[in-house]
Length: 382
Ligand SMILES: Cc1cc2nc3c(=O)[nH]c(=O)nc-3n(C[C@H](O)[C@H](O)[C@H](O)COP(=O)(O)OP(=O)(O)OC[C@H]3O[C@@H](n4cnc5c(N)ncnc54)[C@H](O)[C@@H]3O)c2cc1C
Image (tube, rainbow, N blue to C red; front, side):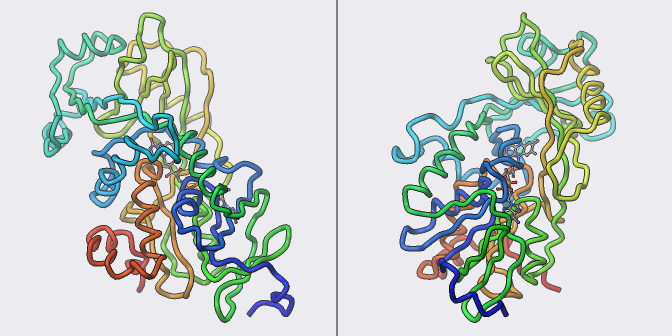
């Protein structure tokens, strides 16, 4: 139990830990009848994983639960409510999966395509050479094109969620690191570096730190592993119109290349386990990235314009973890958003709110059983 001065702490219905995309979206979606506190340890919301993504929405990416959430998020992305934003959130990009002849020999080619998806076109070598002028002349292999893939304007999305939560009177405090949690009779006492608060419900949206927050609360061990991913930015050759290039992904996810306004965003698609931290790119990963890219594309990369790394946090089945903890009361997980947290957030946050808002809990449970079982923290109970 908390110390005796907890009566003097300001009391909230909900305290959300983390102001990345997960924490801000859920705060923005909760009914305005809740008194909500959002605590962010950095001086800027979005400093960690949310501000470091590749900003892509691909309905064919991730396990089935993630694909379902992405599909259900599409309408929001394409037609956001006017009061949310009047700027477009998506821009069509297209996605090309390429497999080298060597990869095709190792694996049955049909397993590499998303043959089950509508609108997947196979491109022959002539079409590939026309559409992808940066492909090396000696490239041998096959490619599949999915037109349904978009660039997401993550900054507008995140800023719009932030605006919404402020408009409804949520209190957002930055430079506020949650250091300890203590259960009270009806909720929690949260100790932060600049004081303490009480809240009936805690929402753990702490990204790479969500496992640590779970430990502070004595909640279920979900086995969260943050994994570093590196991004390298180079300028595109002048002859290449980046606007027309699709996102290009190696069929075994050994690299990807995303065109962006005269530049190319490259990644070795690394997934190196890491402690939660302010992740930085490693020289070796940058070198591996350039080597893999130059083996497939006719690019002579001598100058790097920018580079960064971010942590994508996963549990073993790679589904997000969203729901009430089965072990400790009044503790809600909104974590393990993996490499798809931006593209699933509209639906995931609405689903989370339906779970939290008890009035609608039963309807939500029956209508969304498939997704809810896949997301539930109950799956980690031993
Ligand atoms: C290189 C890269 C490429 C990606 N590409 C895509 C993509 O194309 N499409 C896509 O959909 N997703 C992509 N992702 C994944 C996506 O960015 C994440 O799933 C999403 O941003 C996770 O959001 P979050 O809010 O859970 O985490 P975060 O954005 O990390 O937010 C968590 C917040 O909690 C705060 N916090 C932690 N501990 C405490 C504490 N004790 N007290 C107070 N605050 C705390 C942190 O400071 C942080 O701001 C990519 C990620 C990376 C790294």
